[in-house]
Length: 237
Image (cartoon, rainbow, N blue to C red):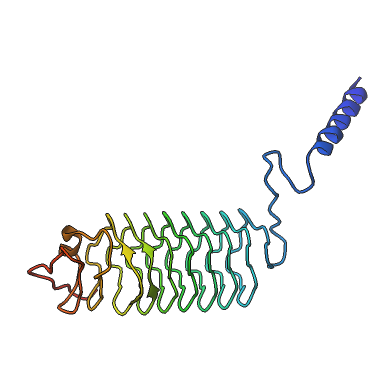
């Protein structure tokens, strides 16, 4: 009798397997191939890729959702169209890379560096990006809405047509940023945000209460209806 049950079970497994397309799980999602080499379109969703040297690789359109890339070297690489949604990017170096149109929504990007990286039209919505270095990066068209960007550095970054609405920009540094187009700051938290010498004439949604808690100087240009506070001095961290 036990042999009969075993035979029936085996036949059922074969039958169910024949109904599931190759490479799919029962939810219809592609299985991640964590052992696959880095290449365009690779599927590393949910994989552990910590402390690796992946500089100079081509990962365009790669699926890196929920991937742990902590302390991995990603410099001088190609990430256009890649999906980093909910990935863990602690202390990752992206310097000198291209990530146009990449998705970083809800990613943890603590202390990572994107110096001189082309991130145009990418998305960092609701991401945890504290102390991120965007020095010299191309951030044109990037969506930072509802992100946690405290103490992030935008020194020399190209900005324009950006959405910072309801983002936490406490102590973020926009000094020497290159603005070419409007920035939406509706509801953004501006506690000691460094805007000395920044031209915000075309800023959208910027209110007096935000400016009153920020750090500016006489060279800061504000949008119509917003004025410089009486005391606008901030100590260096």
